[in-house]
Length: 151
Image (spheres, rainbow, N blue to C red):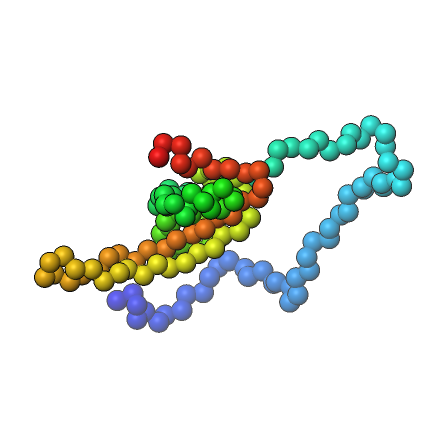
């Protein structure tokens, strides 16, 4: 039984003495060229690039379910506000990212509201319609989303 074998075997290899405190190796500083106070004339000005849309999302099609097509929504679109039915679990930031990704415009403001389902009756059967969430997206002047083209 090897587990309970308590006989001590002495090793034939000598044990090296380790220092009590080990010091880190000395770091060598590379000679850096000193920057002069005068700017060199060969440096070119930075070129402006097209702005990158920050905050894209991979599930934009699951966030915005559909645009809401009503008379009131059509009046809002003339002012630059668009109404969408959104996933009830989403927040304003995620809706803003989804509008950026799908329509390519940058929303100024997103207002959200929960719409409760209504009590309905079908003959003797009483029921309730589904609750949903609505988002009103405000765009800056000049931006436009073409929603009502085919309606």
